[in-house]
Image 1 (cartoon, rainbow, N blue to C red):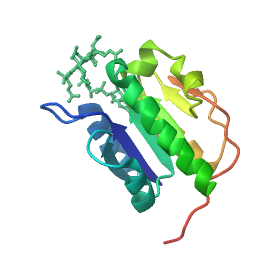
Image 2: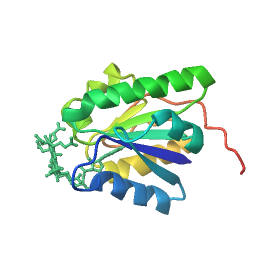
Image 3: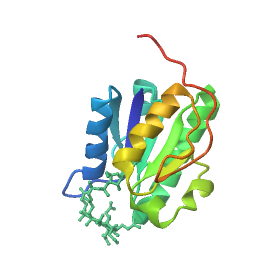
Length: 150
Ligand code: B12
Protein backbone atom coordinates (compact mmCIF):
# COMPACT_ATOMS: atom_id res chain seq x y z
CA UNK A 1 0.00 0.00 0.00
CA UNK A 2 0.98 3.63 -0.34
CA UNK A 3 1.38 5.35 3.02
CA UNK A 4 1.57 9.15 3.05
CA UNK A 5 3.02 10.43 6.32
CA UNK A 6 2.12 13.99 7.18
CA UNK A 7 4.32 16.16 9.37
CA UNK A 8 4.09 19.84 10.30
CA UNK A 9 6.89 22.32 9.69
CA UNK A 10 10.39 21.02 10.22
CA UNK A 11 12.81 22.59 12.67
CA UNK A 12 16.48 21.73 12.85
CA UNK A 13 15.93 18.00 12.87
CA UNK A 14 14.05 15.41 10.85
CA UNK A 15 10.81 13.90 12.19
CA UNK A 16 12.54 10.91 13.80
CA UNK A 17 9.37 9.03 14.71
CA UNK A 18 7.97 9.21 11.20
CA UNK A 19 11.32 8.19 9.71
CA UNK A 20 11.33 5.16 11.99
CA UNK A 21 7.78 4.16 11.06
CA UNK A 22 8.48 4.76 7.38
CA UNK A 23 11.43 2.35 7.54
CA UNK A 24 9.22 -0.27 9.20
CA UNK A 25 6.55 0.20 6.52
CA UNK A 26 9.11 -0.15 3.74
CA UNK A 27 10.46 -3.36 5.29
CA UNK A 28 6.92 -4.68 5.13
CA UNK A 29 6.70 -3.90 1.40
CA UNK A 30 4.75 -0.64 1.53
CA UNK A 31 5.69 2.56 -0.29
CA UNK A 32 5.95 5.71 1.78
CA UNK A 33 6.17 9.42 1.20
CA UNK A 34 6.51 12.40 3.56
CA UNK A 35 4.36 15.47 3.17
CA UNK A 36 5.41 18.53 5.18
CA UNK A 37 2.37 20.74 5.74
CA UNK A 38 4.07 24.11 5.45
CA UNK A 39 6.18 23.25 2.40
CA UNK A 40 3.89 22.23 -0.45
CA UNK A 41 0.36 21.57 -1.58
CA UNK A 42 -1.24 18.46 -0.19
CA UNK A 43 -3.50 17.94 -3.21
CA UNK A 44 -0.43 17.55 -5.42
CA UNK A 45 0.86 14.71 -3.22
CA UNK A 46 -2.57 13.09 -3.12
CA UNK A 47 -2.75 13.12 -6.90
CA UNK A 48 0.82 11.98 -7.54
CA UNK A 49 1.17 9.39 -4.79
CA UNK A 50 -2.43 8.19 -4.47
CA UNK A 51 -2.13 7.06 -0.84
CA UNK A 52 -4.16 4.20 0.59
CA UNK A 53 -3.39 5.44 4.10
CA UNK A 54 -2.52 8.86 5.49
CA UNK A 55 -0.57 8.91 8.76
CA UNK A 56 -0.57 12.16 10.68
CA UNK A 57 2.35 12.49 13.11
CA UNK A 58 1.02 15.15 15.44
CA UNK A 59 2.21 17.24 18.36
CA UNK A 60 -0.49 19.21 20.15
CA UNK A 61 1.17 22.54 19.40
CA UNK A 62 0.46 21.96 15.71
CA UNK A 63 -2.84 20.12 15.93
CA UNK A 64 -4.63 22.97 14.12
CA UNK A 65 -2.42 22.54 11.06
CA UNK A 66 -3.41 18.88 10.87
CA UNK A 67 -7.07 19.74 11.21
CA UNK A 68 -6.75 22.05 8.20
CA UNK A 69 -4.74 19.49 6.21
CA UNK A 70 -7.31 16.84 6.99
CA UNK A 71 -10.09 19.06 5.66
CA UNK A 72 -8.22 19.12 2.35
CA UNK A 73 -7.95 15.32 2.47
CA UNK A 74 -11.65 14.91 3.25
CA UNK A 75 -12.65 17.24 0.41
CA UNK A 76 -10.40 15.25 -1.93
CA UNK A 77 -11.92 11.96 -0.76
CA UNK A 78 -15.47 13.29 -1.21
CA UNK A 79 -14.70 14.81 -4.59
CA UNK A 80 -13.19 11.63 -6.07
CA UNK A 81 -15.21 9.16 -3.99
CA UNK A 82 -12.04 7.44 -2.81
CA UNK A 83 -11.26 5.40 0.28
CA UNK A 84 -8.20 6.72 2.07
CA UNK A 85 -7.70 5.60 5.65
CA UNK A 86 -6.75 8.44 8.00
CA UNK A 87 -4.65 7.50 11.03
CA UNK A 88 -3.06 9.77 13.64
CA UNK A 89 -0.12 9.00 15.91
CA UNK A 90 2.43 10.95 17.93
CA UNK A 91 2.03 12.73 21.27
CA UNK A 92 -1.24 14.54 20.42
CA UNK A 93 -3.61 11.53 20.24
CA UNK A 94 -1.83 10.07 23.26
CA UNK A 95 -2.56 13.15 25.38
CA UNK A 96 -5.85 14.07 23.67
CA UNK A 97 -7.59 10.92 22.37
CA UNK A 98 -10.75 12.95 21.80
CA UNK A 99 -9.14 14.01 18.52
CA UNK A 100 -10.34 10.64 17.20
CA UNK A 101 -13.97 11.73 17.24
CA UNK A 102 -13.24 15.42 16.65
CA UNK A 103 -11.61 14.64 13.31
CA UNK A 104 -13.63 11.50 12.64
CA UNK A 105 -10.41 9.56 12.02
CA UNK A 106 -10.24 5.87 11.13
CA UNK A 107 -7.76 5.18 13.93
CA UNK A 108 -5.46 6.79 16.46
CA UNK A 109 -2.41 5.12 17.93
CA UNK A 110 -1.30 5.83 21.47
CA UNK A 111 2.27 4.74 22.21
CA UNK A 112 3.49 1.38 21.01
CA UNK A 113 3.14 2.71 17.48
CA UNK A 114 5.98 0.61 16.09
CA UNK A 115 3.94 -2.50 16.85
CA UNK A 116 0.44 -1.19 16.30
CA UNK A 117 0.92 0.51 12.92
CA UNK A 118 2.12 -2.62 11.04
CA UNK A 119 -0.82 -4.56 12.45
CA UNK A 120 -3.25 -1.83 11.45
CA UNK A 121 -1.82 -1.71 7.93
CA UNK A 122 -1.99 -5.45 7.52
CA UNK A 123 -5.62 -5.54 8.59
CA UNK A 124 -6.53 -2.53 6.42
CA UNK A 125 -4.94 -4.29 3.46
CA UNK A 126 -6.88 -7.46 4.17
CA UNK A 127 -10.06 -5.55 5.00
CA UNK A 128 -10.54 -7.25 8.31
CA UNK A 129 -11.67 -6.01 11.67
CA UNK A 130 -9.15 -3.80 13.47
CA UNK A 131 -10.33 -4.32 16.99
CA UNK A 132 -8.08 -5.71 19.68
CA UNK A 133 -4.80 -4.20 18.53
CA UNK A 134 -3.05 -2.88 21.64
CA UNK A 135 -2.58 0.94 21.61
CA UNK A 136 -4.85 1.42 18.60
CA UNK A 137 -8.24 3.05 18.94
CA UNK A 138 -10.25 2.36 15.81
CA UNK A 139 -13.37 2.35 13.72
CA UNK A 140 -14.26 -1.05 12.31
CA UNK A 141 -13.41 -1.41 8.66
CA UNK A 142 -15.20 -3.64 6.24
CA UNK A 143 -14.18 -2.61 2.74
CA UNK A 144 -10.78 -3.88 1.60
CA UNK A 145 -8.70 -1.45 -0.44
CA UNK A 146 -8.89 -2.40 -4.10
CA UNK A 147 -5.45 -3.12 -5.47
CA UNK A 148 -4.03 -1.86 -8.70
CA UNK A 149 -1.83 -4.72 -10.02
CA UNK A 150 0.64 -2.13 -11.40
C1 B12 B 1 13.19 15.42 20.67
C2 B12 B 1 11.94 16.20 20.96
C3 B12 B 1 11.74 17.37 20.27
C4 B12 B 1 12.59 17.80 19.08
C5 B12 B 1 11.98 17.13 17.81
C6 B12 B 1 12.94 16.13 17.26
C7 B12 B 1 12.36 15.41 16.09
N1 B12 B 1 13.12 15.41 15.09
O1 B12 B 1 11.27 14.89 16.08
C8 B12 B 1 12.35 19.33 19.04
C9 B12 B 1 13.40 20.02 19.91
C10 B12 B 1 12.33 19.98 17.66
C11 B12 B 1 11.04 19.44 19.76
C12 B12 B 1 10.23 20.53 19.65
C13 B12 B 1 9.04 20.67 20.32
N2 B12 B 1 8.54 19.81 21.26
CO1 B12 B 1 9.33 18.08 21.68
N3 B12 B 1 9.98 16.45 22.29
C14 B12 B 1 11.01 15.74 21.95
C15 B12 B 1 11.05 14.47 22.81
C16 B12 B 1 12.03 14.72 23.98
C17 B12 B 1 11.46 13.20 22.08
C18 B12 B 1 10.70 12.98 20.76
C19 B12 B 1 11.37 11.86 20.00
O2 B12 B 1 12.23 12.11 19.17
N4 B12 B 1 11.01 10.64 20.29
C20 B12 B 1 11.58 9.46 19.63
C21 B12 B 1 10.84 9.23 18.31
C22 B12 B 1 11.34 7.95 17.66
O3 B12 B 1 9.48 9.08 18.64
P1 B12 B 1 8.32 10.09 18.23
O4 B12 B 1 8.82 11.21 17.42
O5 B12 B 1 7.51 10.40 19.42
O6 B12 B 1 7.48 9.15 17.26
C23 B12 B 1 6.90 7.95 17.72
C24 B12 B 1 5.45 8.13 18.16
O7 B12 B 1 5.14 9.43 18.57
C25 B12 B 1 4.68 7.68 16.99
N5 B12 B 1 4.36 8.53 15.87
C26 B12 B 1 4.92 9.68 15.45
N6 B12 B 1 4.36 10.08 14.31
C27 B12 B 1 3.43 9.17 13.97
C28 B12 B 1 2.54 9.06 12.89
C29 B12 B 1 1.68 7.96 12.81
C30 B12 B 1 0.75 7.86 11.67
C31 B12 B 1 1.67 6.96 13.82
C32 B12 B 1 0.73 5.80 13.75
C33 B12 B 1 2.54 7.07 14.90
C34 B12 B 1 3.40 8.16 14.96
O8 B12 B 1 5.47 6.59 16.50
C35 B12 B 1 6.82 7.03 16.53
C36 B12 B 1 7.72 5.80 16.63
O9 B12 B 1 7.50 5.10 17.83
C37 B12 B 1 9.56 14.37 23.30
C38 B12 B 1 9.36 13.69 24.65
C39 B12 B 1 9.30 12.20 24.49
N7 B12 B 1 9.94 11.52 25.40
O10 B12 B 1 8.69 11.66 23.53
C40 B12 B 1 9.16 15.84 23.31
C41 B12 B 1 7.73 16.20 23.01
C42 B12 B 1 7.28 15.42 21.81
N8 B12 B 1 7.83 17.61 22.65
C43 B12 B 1 6.83 18.32 23.06
C44 B12 B 1 6.66 19.70 22.80
C45 B12 B 1 5.56 20.41 23.58
C46 B12 B 1 7.47 20.36 21.88
C47 B12 B 1 7.36 21.85 21.42
C48 B12 B 1 5.95 22.37 21.23
C49 B12 B 1 8.16 22.69 22.41
C50 B12 B 1 8.04 24.18 22.16
N9 B12 B 1 7.39 24.86 23.11
O11 B12 B 1 8.49 24.69 21.18
C51 B12 B 1 8.14 21.82 20.10
C52 B12 B 1 7.17 21.56 18.92
C53 B12 B 1 7.85 21.25 17.67
C54 B12 B 1 6.88 21.12 16.54
N10 B12 B 1 6.12 22.14 16.28
O12 B12 B 1 6.78 20.10 15.91
C55 B12 B 1 5.82 17.48 23.82
C56 B12 B 1 4.58 17.21 22.96
C57 B12 B 1 3.34 17.24 23.78
C58 B12 B 1 2.14 17.16 22.91
N11 B12 B 1 1.01 17.05 23.57
O13 B12 B 1 2.18 17.18 21.70
C59 B12 B 1 6.67 16.19 24.17
C60 B12 B 1 5.87 14.89 24.25
C61 B12 B 1 7.35 16.50 25.54
C62 B12 B 1 6.33 16.58 26.65
N12 B12 B 1 6.15 15.51 27.41
O14 B12 B 1 5.71 17.57 26.86
N13 B12 B 1 10.79 18.31 20.51
